[in-house]
Image (cartoon, rainbow, N blue to C red; front, side, top):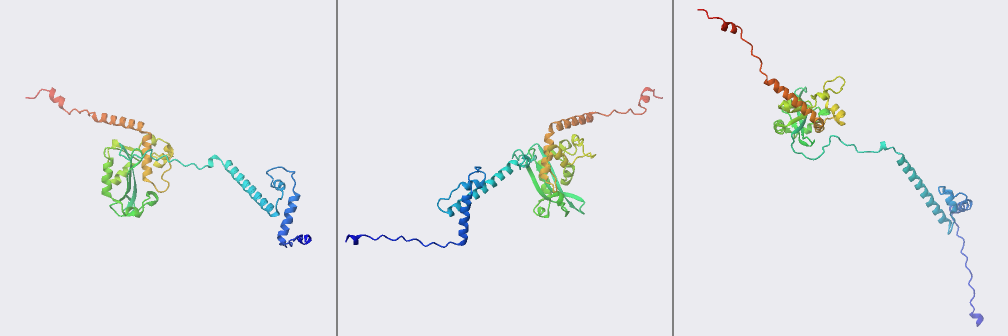
Length: 312
């Protein structure tokens, strides 16, 4: 019985070898040869082969291959990042994009009517295109903030919009202000104010308005501006004055009356003290000349008739 009770030892079942894909077998052989061929002679962390040689397979060749793949991917990313950082460091400061500051930008948002008002107008062609008519009028206060800016529909038919300079297009005049309405509004705004602008006689002529000469500050007529070198020309353009004195770039292509009015006002404000002193001196001289009375000429024969005795 005891012998029967003894259990027979179980036979060990050896698993049948699984036939691998030939490509997988070649990959395993390649990984084994690479792992045994590498040494730890080089300890440079920047050398991928030395790092790979220090890795020993633990579980399977598949895990080793996966680790090698991850390490190579990490090193390639690190290398590309270092190159990009180096390019950024080597970039000169001159190439850094710095937002440009507009020198004509208003210093505040105060849109109230001030004692000084700048005006600029854009013209269109009427009649046969040679005659100018008002197409847009703009007024700004001494801070450069817009007081009035409207397109104006001329009384006569427009034959040339002069878009390349005026910036006015046919669609702008479809809902434009009537000329009389714009004229009345501008007259109200400039009444009793110092009017600043460039070649203001053209703007006032287009508006059919007048303004006291003592209250006009024309940047095209101010003598210190005219004395600046300008290749033989006696009168400088507003574009030239704005570029040379203010460092502002205007009138490149289509004109903007807002920028033009702001440029004229800023030119006046920068020279306001000397300009007003010159105006006062000229006004004083004019008043002195006006007060002087011309000498009366003696009438012919008056002295002779009074000295001689009357004839009886």
